[in-house]
Image (cartoon, rainbow, N blue to C red; front, side, top):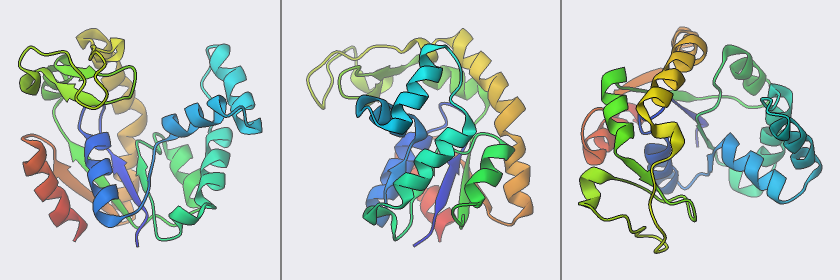
Length: 207
């Protein structure tokens, strides 16, 4: 089983499609954000160290994130491969990741900035369980279909915030496309269209 990285700008659908591929292939999806929250909630040694940075308003250092990944990869469910969702974000992170695990394929979701801003404006998230939907499908409802909570628009999804996140992506993460392309690992997938259409393109890219 392969170790796969999902790359792409915020709002391109990394989480949605990484979760689908995870289910189909039976390998875990690793989100560094989820891992950090779990460590902090569990009050582990790594979690306490990370919390100190978060509470000081600082980014958690790459070395700490890589150590969390190293520990997670030792767990039994990772022995047949994993999916990295939204990590690495920089070339330094990519090089650090390669020092602990072999990467077999990198899927790069491609979507224009304009389409991303429009998509994010309609995204709604349940703060209780993390369920995500879109106003296009909700038809005026704000009910979470997973837990019955109330769906809200995250501050991160406001157009001005999205544009700022895209600027950071283009500066820091886009160079990874060239990095992995040079290694012959990159497969680009057009992320415009329905979830089903993109999933079919994803399936072909993974073959």
